[in-house]
Image 1 (cartoon, helix red, strand yellow):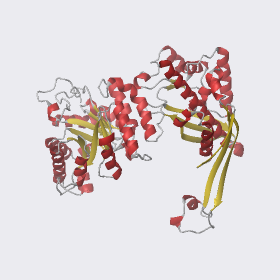
Image 2 (cartoon, helix red, strand yellow):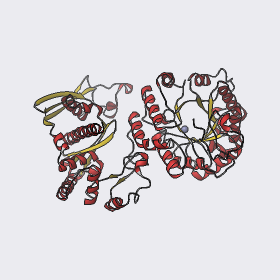
Image 3 (spheres, helix red, strand yellow):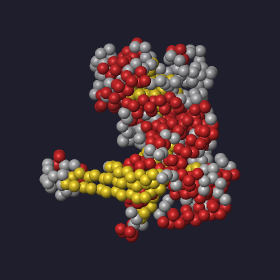
Length: 590
Ligand SMILES: [Zn+2]
């Protein structure tokens, strides 16, 4: 690790970097001095994976670790070895398969159990066996949690911390010390909270991580508590915040202002309940606004691609509104904004989107005027003359009146504009022609109508107890012409859209290899104009992704299958257009 991570070079004579194996903690002689640099510590693979709906395989975890290393974080917390077989396997495979260029892998665990020795403790044994250079252990620093949750004495809690740190240090490991419920504990009994971390420091912990485990602390209190801690310790201070009061990033920045030099959190703010501190926002704020070094400066532009790549790996759609990295983070809709932006790019943007690898986007809808459409065309590199622009605007208005909503369907909008501009996309759309599609959903009873005991009923039967057990199958047939060839393909699926998607792919994928990397990520249906009852119109939005990014397409019809089909074909054509464009760019470069 670089020796210059830490604070102002006006550090005291005692060189803490030597004591902590290269890590230079903050200079506690400057209560208001901002650190020059902080170490970014990502816990997506441990704390972040507690998020509802997130389930990672060992392979997923290895890929996420590689992405974090590519971004340039200092530490990747890999999991809790011994807590479950998956994390054990992760560390075993990481040792052989994971080639991290700059990040240090960290194994997580807890202090020894109460009233037992450290040497014989299972958790500590697993931590040592994980084979990492650094470990992070969690310890109770709130008296309430010691007496109520752990059911032991405060003295024993302190001894647990000391013994565990000493044991791990004697095994040659760097030790980070997570003080759980630190802020809540400090509020109740500051003496005990401080005693726990002082003991850990004495025993050789290199970083004292102050955790806001319940996530309810506010920034002003964080500043106060961290500054108090800073006065009492010469170890590095770490910050670990949860977002329950919506302040995790603000709290992180507040802690850094008071000298914290290790910033824990998760890219995209993953985590239990409302999540951990969003490292994407923390990194960008610290780097761009506070002048604190985080990841290597030339890697800041990897922030958005990495955030999206990790979202893909953990299979959770990245919210468009995520600060800095979301697809809407620099999207502009109002006509006034867009014309002002054309003159001054900083008029409605707090930072240059390119600096974090994101980009300005103009959202086009019927509300937006001609100028927005013009910027959108320029953004896409399309040469639309005034009459063509007028035609696109008229078409948009007509379609939006019919129920289309283009501001959420960038893929379909782009196809529409490219078609109006003529050229390659229009040709591409002609590469295959659809003759027909058909989808059949078939349900049949597999047994008699029964009053089975509750435990054996499936979900459908619990809601509809009169229904008998049955089997549902869906099958789709698609007939298309590719060039001179007529292809008929049939596929099954777990629903009509899935079956149609599979059949269409089966028919055309042999001709368009690029489709292999394109897959559907989300499907949303909305019924419009419900006043008309069965005559209501259905709007379908499909999200599709390839390795480089994602796009949305739209279909509108009185028939939900037809609306889905429109969105599906658009998503495929758009995916092919992207792949074709990429191929041209790459050829152009070589
Ligand atoms: Zn946590």
